[in-house]
Image (cartoon, rainbow, N blue to C red; front, side):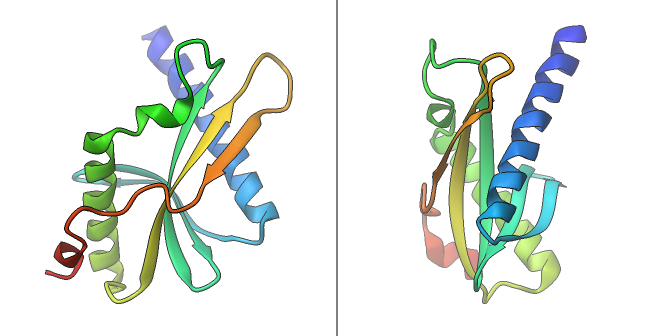
Length: 131
């Protein structure tokens, strides 16, 4: 149980760093840690006129690969389904959307290395977003 708590704490720390990064870039943060029946969306932000769904991956090192490599096709599908559920709930199906990934590598007490991948992936069968 202790390992799960520590992992969640570290992930939350990465998400908080990502929120600070996005706010510094002029984004409006609409929501964070949004749970849907399909999964969780880490951050939902607004970049000008675009609603952006952001997956944040945090690691202590790149020894076993970069954090963004963990956002595989299955994870992307869960994010897209979660985004659709959130958009439907808000009545925002006609809004412009985007899917980004933020990689946070936090080694020791140093400032994190944050890499923001805009347009990281496209929803498969985008027409389904409006079906």
